[in-house]
Image (cartoon, rainbow, N blue to C red; front, side, top):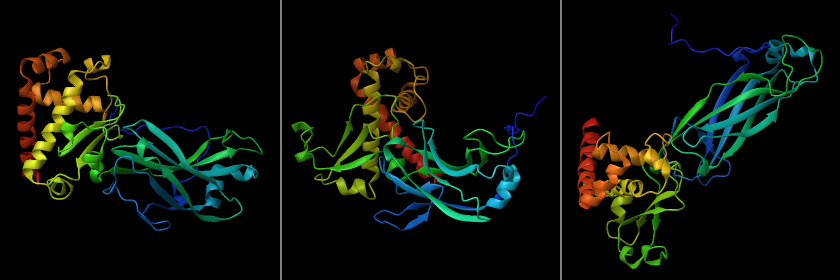
Length: 319
């Protein structure tokens, strides 16, 4: 019986170099407000906000001589070799080549860097960064054991996964003066918060920016929300956000909203359905959810407040 725990192997129709030819690799990110200063990019980015762009740098030392010998590229002296930096985000299904640079074959060893910009509106939750060494234009003597096609991957360096946290790990927040915001009606001018949707789609990532929590800077409790908020305010805020998301789901005209599995991980639709099932049970259907709203409009608010208190208590116990 095959062992399911074994890692799958990718076979290449040409020789590849040893990973040891990449002597050093280092990831860093540009500090806020700095043009030149970079800091090490750790596994968690704790000061990231939804929609915030990022500038990253990849430094590397490559033993070019060992790389060429490992692939037998000495037989193709005109072949061009490139180092490229990539990024992907599973939550938003976005992937891109951030930067690339040709490798100088005339040097025995190369120390260099790649720099690239990440669009903050295209990512959420987690990103994966990695670099590859590729053949651009293979030339010279063809051989069964040498790469012969443009884009042939000689080496893929170890990937670097980063969790995007900060206020982005909780919910997209924005401080707003409600008295001067024309999008709000008179009844909302003195509210503490407002859940703002801009062309929202249930398939959008929850942290993608189409839903933002506006905080009223003119409200007396505003500073409690931005800093160390009280348990009472946090509970109310969490429960009201739950009510808003589940309400939007219940009265949506989107046909996909009928199926809780129609939405991908981390999307608004998947989060709204998860909250609905936590409040009303795993077997709840969209029709039953709408009937609950019509029969007892205040029931959702009660359940959401209790759910928020229980979640907060469990978080405190875990700490």
